[in-house]
Image 1: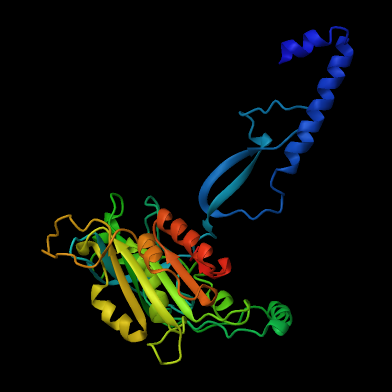
Image 2 (image 1 turned 90 degrees about the vertical axis):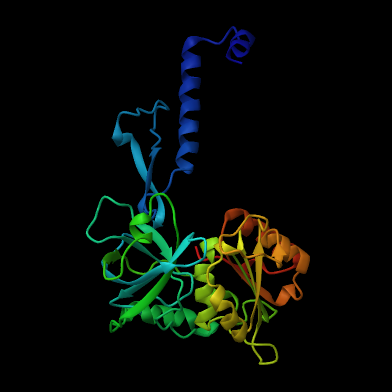
Length: 358
């Protein structure tokens, strides 16, 4: 293109060409500045740092070697962890295949864990060379969430709380459970022994925003039906939600919400919490296990006669009976979450009622 332009305008003088170059550079610099993150941007810790060039006023030639020409952009999982000790109470195999373990940790203060779906970071005690793992807490919350504020008084309460500052709380010891899938680089925790200690961060994340989106009058149609979707170890925060009593579910005819759990794994031997299914049914949860590879041999000798395929296939087969009165919680592999969310929205579920814990 440069040859065509040059040959199309043979009479342009060199001084004029230089001026045009300066004008174009200034315009491009202005455009680049519009997309640069503001200096007040929040910097997330525990993250990978990307180097973003800062546009200069008179040139587009960025010097990679000069760090003064770059602004760090942080991308990560939240604030710096504040570490405290956690003691391993037990560590047992969570399913017949041994794919996952169920870990119990005793912590000094469980009051921060108020919402299903919240998580902590865990690392070997005193070891700074091993990257921490991020673990959603699988047991029911051990802290008490604040009571909801009526919509008309919410702003006034927020201003009063900000002026008063945080209320001091008394630490209360708690035992938290975790479901951990074995990987090539986490054997330090999947093989940990009772009595050993680990470093545990403060509770992180807001969890599933159940109170804001399933309760109250945010939407014209009240939530009467709750759908739960999980694959693999993604059942951990879903279990927390079921046992938290924050979903307001109950058996049919008892006045609470109806609830169905779709839970997918590869084989029957890969499915944790099977012993809890009966308890969840008593709470009002219809459990729908889905096996994606039922023909694979199981060491336990189990022969699967239930639903097969994928969680999203089971939802498509069953449909959503009352979409405008339904909400959903999802945790699992990306493909399942995207497909299920798409199906829910197409059926008429409010997008704000399709909840994730991140």
